[in-house]
Length: 175
Image (cartoon, rainbow, N blue to C red; front, side, top):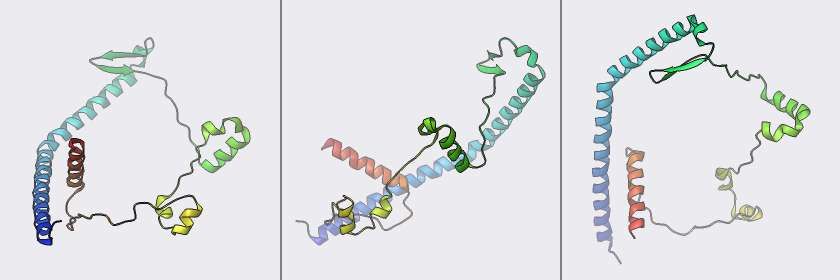
């Protein structure tokens, strides 16, 4: 059995290593942010150039629709261009009214057209008493003590936690 002094030392070691990991993650995020700042002006310029070229191509195709009667499309320079039949959009203003009309006029297809879901709300179920849980066929498990190792600093981001979980998973696989 470990002494409190040994646990104190192990906790200090854990905390120091977690701070080092956090520092490295922050350095990575800072480097990514710096690269983003460095490259974004050129990316924005290139995106603007592409949008302008697309607009010019769109206008040229629109003016020359006669070139796209048969075939309606062609591939040039790795890009499919031409005309195609528009798919159209289904619009409705009142979903409840559409559901009622489907049930009235297309009842045999309502399973294909109307989504019905029933889902337990775990957050609500967790608030029930043990007696209420038993009434609905639930049981409470794993209610004993469990080991807690939770850093109190809140500035550690999710990536650090994900890396720690990945490391624990790797340790379990090795064992």
